Each structure stands twice: as C-alpha cells, then as structure tokens.
Length: 320
Image 1 (cartoon, rainbow, N blue to C red):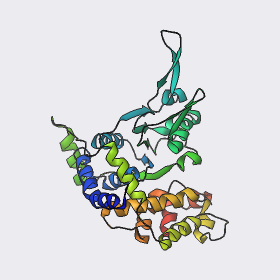
Image 2 (cartoon, rainbow, N blue to C red; image 1 turned 45 degrees about the horizontal axis):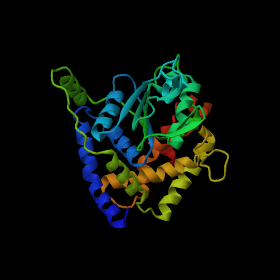
Image 3 (cartoon, rainbow, N blue to C red; image 1 turned 90 degrees about the vertical axis):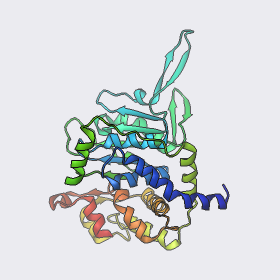
Image 4 (cartoon, helix red, strand yellow; image 1 turned 30 degrees about the vertical axis):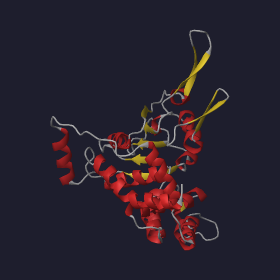
C-alpha cells in the first residue's frame, strides 16, 4: 500500500467508523464506550474481553458487530463439559475410511467466546494459539485461521461458583478489558420500548473483510512520536512492584505488573483512537484515554488493596 493510499484511508476512516457505529446503534442503545473500544480492537487486530452482569446485551453487541462488518461469525457457548476439539475441530472417518479434518467454530472471522470462564483451563487453552498466532494445530497439522480474525469473549463478574478464572497468560492476549455497566434510566426506557414491540432492527454490512484489513494496515502506518512511546513504556514500567521505576502505589498495592505487551497495546490503541477521531498522530492524551481498558486485566492487586476496597482501575487512576 502506497503512502497516498494510506493517507486516503486514514482520511476516510472517521466517516466509515461513524457509519459502522450508527448501524450498531440500531440494536444497541447506549454502551458507546464499549462500541468504541470494539471498533478500536478491530483496527488493532486485537481481541477484547467484555465483562458485565447478565442482560447488558454483551452477546447482542458482538453479533451486531459481525453483521455490521459483513464477516463470518461463530458463537461458542462455553460450558464445563466443552472439549478443546469442540473449538478447534477434529478428524473424522469418511465413507472411504479416511481421516478428514472437520473445522471447528474457531475458523471464522469473528468468534464469540460466550461465558469463557465457564469452561476448564484445558479448553480455555485451545484458544491460546489461535489468539496469538492466528493458527490452529491439530493432529500434527497447522492451519491458518481466516483473516481478519478476532476473539470477542464475554464474562459474568458476579458468578464465581462453577467458573474457572482465565490465567494471566490468556488475559494478556486480550487487547482490551471492556467493562459494561447498567444503562441510564432514559436508555433503559428506550431499550424496553424497542425490544418489546413487533419491529426488529435490520443491520446492514457497512464494511467488508478487505476494508477491515486495509484499515488495519493504515493504522499500523500512523506515525507516533518518541515521547509518546516513552510515556507509554514508562507508564507500564510504573506498574511493576519491586522494580526500578515502579510507582509507590504499585509497590504498596500491586503483587504483579503489566508486561511489554501492555506497552505495545497502549501505543496501538492510541493510534486507533486517533484514527477514529481523525486526529492524526496519537498524543499522550490518547495513551491516557485507553490506559484503563488496556491495563486493568494486566495488573494483580494484593491483599492490602483488596482490604481497602481498591481495584485495578483505582490504581491506574493514581498512576495517571
């Protein structure tokens, strides 16, 4: 892609993404931050974890995104008895008694991992290679996944019994941890009015796979100044307790900090945010704007923080 093509794409990006979000708004009322973060995740080739209580339209939001993008979509309902082969696929005998590989639901552009913490670690791990390498290895064969490829997972924060917390290695592979909160009173009235009638939203595809891939390449080409990169790196280094450059609040309240992937994610997310807003090269303000969804799942608070009622968002606020 030439520089002229990249510039043209970046100029068109805000209007394209606005149309994309308006299409999603036909079925999703409110939740603007979650929609923005998912759009940024798509631009960054990243995966997102959506956390919220039941009934906040997490699943509907993800299916609406797939429809608005016109991409192949599959949903995996995670349960305690789900096996890794139920995700990746398995070899089966055909009529000629030959083994033929049948692809699992992971072979799609957008994969909804619904209630991902309800399945045991061995099944959660089936997504690790797919999320990082965009590949699946089965029976000694490695197969590439469709491009683009995104995992959008949901999790219920209030149910702990019968769940399996995601390991830190898998959490780190999510670009964003998106918190979805209750709608406002006005939004909830609108939700009830729009979902208890006879009419249903018809979402049209506003982009294609080729459009998404082109925008991803354009976002990667967005220039970023040295001071912005250094700010992102220093912010992440401040989260590492017991190390040089750690912030006092990290030494006091954190047992584990973010790794280098967090620095990369901050810069990429800042590029995507600047592109969405048509603001050119990202600034420190863009880094600060994406810090919470990028870092909140990469920090581990200690017992002192839990005793004082502090979560990772509160720590990040102090670091900023």
